[in-house]
Image (tube, rainbow, N blue to C red; front, side):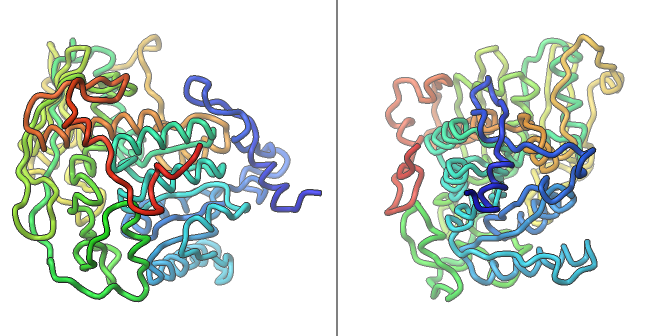
Length: 473
């Protein structure tokens, strides 16, 4: 006889379809009709585990998740015990404010996310970890049958991203990337722009300009003792073993401070994936190239020569797609995306808004930064999309769309293959910055053409017991 936990898991894991019919039928949750129990009845709720409790989790992911009555956050995992306790207390406080009950929830804590994933009561996970810890837990969660909300970028390398995308598709879970510019809240101008471009309001699309900032040099290189509350080996994961220093990891006192790992190539590529995962994703949406990638690219970048932080600063990358459209990515462009066609152009951005208050902005004037949506002719922006024209997927808010997709057995606005392709375009742009010569890319085989040096950048050695290469699926 099944236990209550097993019975509930069986109830929540029912049929559905996904990308191209690939998603397996056994992994979507069924829900009791609202006429019977109500859409937020306990049997309808989605139990969520939060993996990683840092800046993005507290300021963005969890606040958006908790707005949805269908969601029930019941667990948190982190390799830093101090952050783990902060996470438990913060989530419980939010529920206390929401319900008026101080003991409404007792959040379970895990210093190893594998134990969280193994909990049969948990239906879904939100992964808000550093970039080098995205692909592996996403793969493991998928293979454990947990639905996944993953912070961007999808992976540290192209190979990791492909492994993760394949594992997610094989498992059939509902996947959403945190590319929230696709959702109409809080920025409806991105979807609107892409619909206007896809429907020819600026004529034939010729060029796309993507504005991204770089990061500064710096960082204290002093060797420091590892805090007793931090499992540093686990935190390093598949990346090489290096000595601990605070500016390589994260603050021990302030969750709002921009963490140092964002500026270390060991853990990520810098702003080309940090902001690039957002803007290049929008460029792909508007271009209609979401399931492919560029075929040629070249670029350059300035990299620090001293200090701890070594991700790129000023840079420029030019890419060309099979449809003839060129994309120019660099810090000389205002932070946003400009689509240029034969009959005009449209620029779109968040305005003078970052993901968090500590995000850098592009080297453009405040006036340019504050203009979030404008065109060569204002009439373009008011153009009506007709009933027989292209209408893009409409998502109310990224986290809400994920939860509703789990409930309603549908695909999210940012499914895993589209997410992987956007990240790949960022990562191979980083390769072009490094090699500073023209490269040819095969988006079908996902490899550089006749270029062993460039292909060597598509994966990294994975240390010890960690990494996606160790996962069988």
